[in-house]
Length: 293
Length: 282
Image (tube, rainbow over the protein chains, first blue to last red):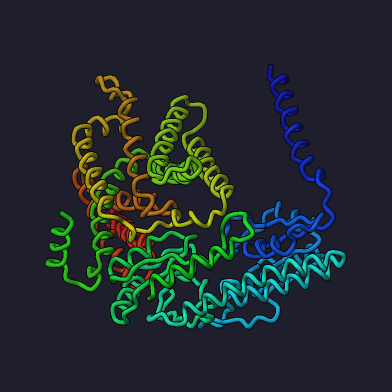
């Protein structure tokens, strides 16, 4: 009896495994792009759209968010190993990169942060959330297009054309954002987490305070009290939380200080759609106008 | 109702740390949770079940994961359901007497933790839920305080009605059975109480330290107490004291409230330990 059960289980396991393997070799993929996380995945989707034989894979998955303290799993290494190019944000976001390059010295890596001036916080650490500023995002898209064209020259023309289309849409949105945000009355904001310095710099917003720099820990009671007093004293009207993290702390601050909580999206998670970044930024524009006018 | 309580706090405790209502809520929650933990902790220490309550805390992680997978917003329901199932499973396997109690609890404890980690990390990153590991007492809502008060009343009533039976079962189950006590039922009742209070408070106390809050006050009280009554009273007093002072200290030092409370309880334990030794030597 036990032998028979074991045989059935073994057979089932082999079937599952072989079906799992079949998925990989089925398609005719000539050039495989693996991106480290969501914003780069959206860029790569736009640039490679309609190019035959190119596959874009996102290493960290759509809902992971920022790669703070990301633990590389063996499936990630396997994914990267099979890539023709690995696209990273750079600026220190992929803290695991040294592990990857030591394991795979021949891997071709495109660093999208090339040429972007980095902001540092008080402790001198570089802030990696560059894509949240739409101008930086535009540079990242250009960097990525150049990198892909070099790695896959036979499709360079298609990449260039796609990138141009995408950049055109982005710069229309950027101009619109600058125009509509140029005459808002309040410019002081309070944010949770460290995602928005580049965004604030671009639109000349003044981040008075950042509560809770570490994304997955809760602010202490004293930190909350200091923030509330700061808001009461400064006339800040709005605190901005991110949809990726729980709003409980932001709600506490808002309730006590009379400010309102709004949600700003750093476009770091979302659906599998090539317009996701554009949509997120349009949403942010609406939110900011509502919150700060 | 809440505004009256806030007014009372403002009148009797006009300090900096009670200025904001999240601290008032946290204080009220501590005033309700800690006596509960002190009370139930006495029996946990008596019954040598501290490892068991730890396992229940770990199982909460799986309960959360099940809630996430089923798309429930309020994880309390899935946590409670899973913890009860888990507790009754442990107690059933222990009754079968195949392995020693600590082995069985160890097996369940690690299974609960591992299953929780696997399920939570599969559905998109564990980091989102890491708040449950250390807990956050500052996010207590007024309606949750009402729920805690209800649980405190319910547990106190059950305690008064069943205390003699609980105690006799814990000291000598055979004797209890010969007196006509349904020992199985009494044991299960206790297990259910522990499961309920652990899951209800895990969001604010955290998986990693919830068990210390159950065990430490009772363990210190055992060092100091001279009889059953003083054992209970001292445990509740120590629990309350470390809860309130831990909350205040955490406000001024900017540290996590749960950990600070447990540290104070631990300091009290070592005091009581040395006091007890000094007394024994004299």
